Length: 105
Image (tube, rainbow, N blue to C red; front, side, top):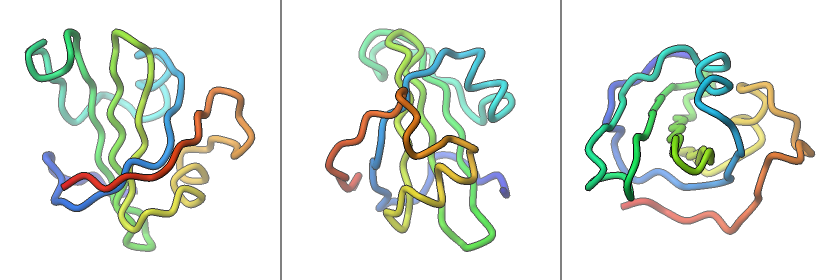
């Protein structure tokens, strides 16, 4: 995976949520590419962010809400399978919360 500059270009789609702690996400992805500490921009807490480009060209954005312990996985194109594979998350992992994809514009 190749690191991308943040903020990422839009559009990008929110695809799936993943229950994880800050230490778990940092062990998986390394130090965040960006940490938002202004609670007015994050619904009250800190948010860690990572952005990557896969060899296929798909862009990935991961945003962790540190307060709630939920990470949202975003992709362009909006295909969740390659993202889970690149992050080594099994598609049937019980920490995943599948929802309708929605476009961030």
